[in-house]
Image (cartoon, rainbow, N blue to C red):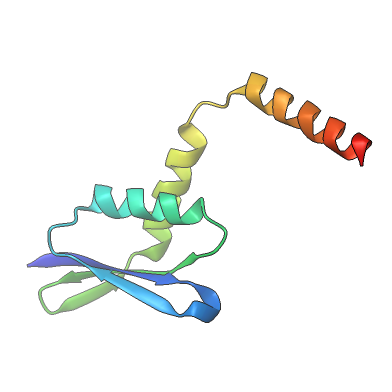
Length: 93
């Protein structure tokens, strides 16, 4: 039996372990990508449990998640609009 253990660190609020034998590597990468997008939490570690062996795969999973984030297209028009709005907001203050 093979499964992943994903440990999420919420800072002062503590940690949460997600252990579900039905989660695939792709689902774990997706969860890590979502975690990396939020500022209030971080990935403590990801372990792969395969029978009697435990392997730390945190680096691999985080690298895959970051590659997915970088592969998403950037909407430059929206970024320019947000930047202009922020400049206008700060000028009004």
